[in-house]
Amino acid sequence: MPEEHAAPRPPQRDRLLTPGEVAALFRVDPKTVTRWASAGRINSIRTPGGHRRFRESEVRALLRGELPQPRQA
Image: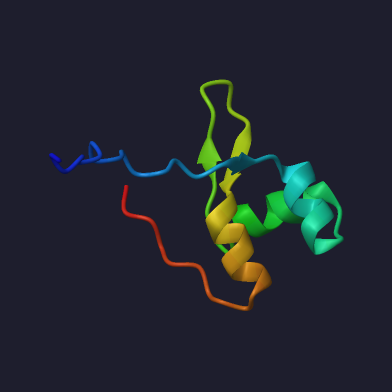
């Protein structure tokens, strides 16, 4: 019987969270999350419309007490 080989999977894309979703996880106001991003305490991505989004994996790491890694541009 021939062995079946699964096609290589593309890397999973990280879910992007809104400031409100991040705020709910940390139990803070969404403006606090925006200030954290401005201060570099948490990495953010800007949508084409200029809104901030946060990678779920980074947010979960912060919740576990891990420090964020600076992103290369």
